[in-house]
Every structure is written in structure tokens, then in C-alpha cells.
Length: 324
Ligand SMILES: [Zn+2]
Image (cartoon, rainbow, N blue to C red; front, side, top):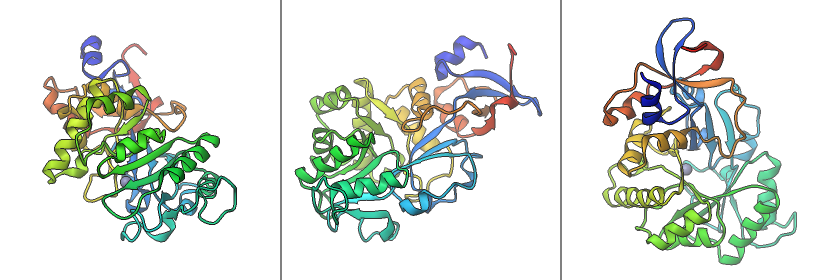
């Protein structure tokens, strides 16, 4: 395929190539990252076969997550435990055992205070967390008061860790933004956000992790999420591809339904590729691995999602470019 046409379709990082050993023709792209997974709920051994080279775990047991991974790919970043109010979401969920939740009941900035904000952040940091996950789900149980939320965000800032919020229920995305939350774990889906709120989120540099496909079958929530992502993306917001892998029946690998839903929200294909290849919050990779999508990209954008879902992770040195 003509390099200009390829760049138009998939962005500037796409290049035509073939695999050195088999001669199979395809397209090389930077490594794909799923920015919302739960490793304790999936078998991650097949993720790289499914095209995912990096993951961000947004809620798990920090003790388990801190153990050295069995393999180098996918690269992992994680939040450690969910920080939540006493009895708050996801307390009591079968998929969220006790080790995955820390109740923060005191805005204390002092270390070693039981239930203290700084204590909870310190614990995740000590286990190697790259982000702090806070739960703001007003539809189920209690949420933090403003003082406690601010204390968690401040403690995270002091340790150089961005804060990612699960914001669910009316007004929760606004609260998250006011508190200085850096990223939303899900595109807001409870209600349609007004243009001023969306513009503020864009101006603040907030990142939104897509997770549109989890609403499959829930018509209103899906429509809200797609409308909100459309507004955020059109206003220049930073979108990250993420699936909430481990939540329900989702493919272990690139999810073509997630990609198609992002396209339905008007996110351009080059922007979708950028959302897949943004290493945040990991540092950029070493370049040792790349994404390989076999075959020629389809001319019709409607066929790009299933084509991209054929992606696998390969060693960069395996790939031969025409100008090599
Ligand atoms: Zn999740």
C-alpha cells in the first residue's frame, strides 16, 4: 500500500513490512496498550498473541501485582488496590476480593494512620503502583467527601502518581475534574455531559479511557458514553484505548467491538491508533517489540476494526521494511 495512503488511514507510525522468517506481508505499528484491565480476572498469557503488548491494571491486589511477572510481554503498569469510602464500590463484589480494596476513612496526610489517605497512597506506591485508582461511584454505596478526595489526590501528587477515577453516578465526572483527577477509567456513561464540562476536562489535560464495549446491551449507558466520547474527542481530548478486560465476556486481545464503538463516536482511525499506542502511564518502550497486523489494510474504514483485531506482538527485529 502507498505510504501516504497508509498514513492517511492509520497515522504516521504505520509502515508496510513483512515478517523476515515467513515473508508474510502486513503493517507494523508501535506496541498496543490496553489502558484498563484487571489481571486477576483474566489469563494474560494469550494477550500478546491477541496484539496487546502493554496493560494498565486498574484495580487488583498490590501484593500480587508487585510479584515479578512471568514474562516480559505484556509490559505492566498498575494502580494496586481501589481506594474507596467505607463500604463504597466495589466492596462486596465477587470480582473484588478484600485484597483489592482499601477503605480510606480519614483525610490524614500523615503516614501510618489507619484508614488515612496518605497511608493508602503510600501502600500502593510501595508496591510499585504507577497510578492511584479512586472509586467515585455514587450509584452504589458511599463516596469520599471532598476533603478525603482532595487528600488522596494531594498524596498521589506528592509521590508523582497520576490519579485515575471510576466516576459513576450523576455529578461524579464533575467532582473528579474539580478534584484534579488526571484520568477517568471509563468514558462517563451515567449522563450526557455539557459542553462546558467537556471543554474543562480537555483544558485540564484529563485522559479518558474508552471502555465503550462494556455497555453492550445497555442502550442508554452506551449512547451516553458514545455521545460523551464524541464531544471529548471533537474538542481535542486525550482518548486512551481501554476495555476493562476482566469485566464480563471480552476478547483477550484487541477488541474489535471497542474499536468500532470508538469509530462510531467519531474518533478518527489515526486517533484510535494513537489511543492504542500511547504508552501512558508507562515510559516509552525500548522498541524491542512492535505490533504486526497481517495483510493489507482494507480500503473501507468499516472493515478496519476486525482487521486490526488480527494484530499480534512480534519482535521488531523480525520485521523487514521495504527500504531496509
Ligand atoms: Zn475496571
